[in-house]
Image (cartoon, rainbow, N blue to C red):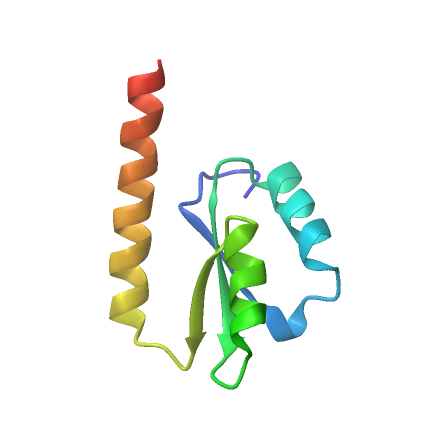
Amino acid sequence: MLDEPVSAVLVDSALLRLPAADQAKLFDAVAPGVLVVVFISEEASPAERVRHEVLGFQVFSKPFPVEDLLEKVEALTLGASLRGSRAS
């Protein structure tokens, strides 16, 4: 992420040890403005999904179709770049 721009950061919620609010701070610090996609278990509670969504993360249940992920990331990053160009 230091040498090349990235479109998205993909993380598995089962591997994250920080509280959700600290995760948001971490990603804002290391990848500001970059889409963060969090993968959660199919058995995850709706509260877990909402907790990540409220912090601005996109949430996918595992397993997931890779094509769906790529389409969603492309659409979201395109929308973000269009919003950013209008703000300039």
